[in-house]
Image 1 (cartoon, rainbow, N blue to C red):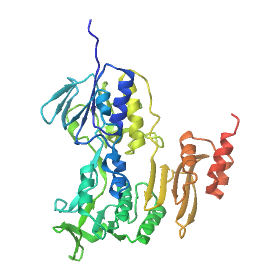
Image 2: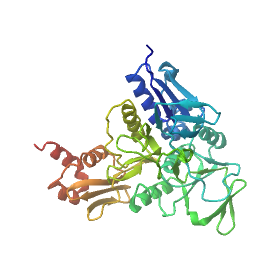
Image 3: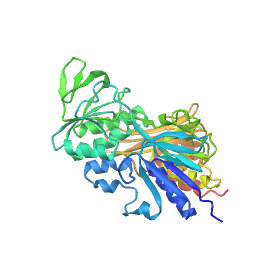
Image 4: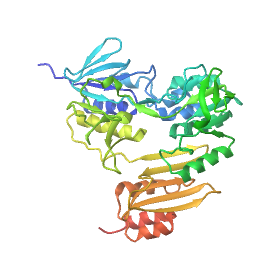
Length: 417
């Protein structure tokens, strides 16, 4: 009597799929695992790309698994192709080469892609994204010390690229976001302008998007007065979007990403989603959000795999969590970093010393935080938010002195329930 071998297909080859594939194999030595990725690379971490650009690691240092033959050894079939269609009625995926794969359970972890440049001319020679290893290689082939580089965007990814470019000693110009300050999607104006000031102190020039009309051959930026500023390289880093277009007609419900429940299951019973493409439970709001960070992707991959095998693992929700090192200045934001309606906020600011702490409260719970230039209690802050510890009298003490976070954590951890 032949054994019923389960067929698992994972679309995407990033951190979520790698963790899912390994979890599936550890639990089932006989199942069929197919991992389909678009790039001709061993699975790697996009978050490691800036370290490659800065020269701290080689391209192979970005790989999620460093051992040669790792996936072959686990009998994980890693295919380079693009999925054109998901047929949820017949449990099949069709690739761009015409191949069709059947599945019992499917996990979609197709991640994100860079947003298009907001300016015409982005297809000109010398204009690149910084999203793939191939992009990274092209950038390193183009720049040298003294090269003039324009970075269009000042969000999380762009801010990490800043450090890499400074280490390569280029002449760097950064286009701020429409808010007029850096990392506005993870920091308030005080923090964003401090990071901007820090970059300017390192020799980075800042321009506003309203001052740019288009990207011209050269490459060059055409300014609002019709003057041209030439560069050796223009890098576009103006945001990302979830890769969900190929799901049209599949019956899988999407919004900004693929809508999933606490089990990472979509509205189709045997299809799951994980990582940057999954729009799941938000820890802070209870709503659904896409949190495009690698720790969330890894957690998603494990939990989705457990549930694909019939388990009942639940994801308690993604905490908005950002830790950013911009040319040596470390900044963080967690949870409801902008505060909540009816809540209280405590701040401590040393602008000249590039130090800032903001704590946001709802009743006596710490629900969000921002720090700049302080790394001494990052983990404790995150712990207090995620564990939803009632601070009691410590809330008032923290409002008076936000640096007492560690004291509050230790005191509350010693409370007898």
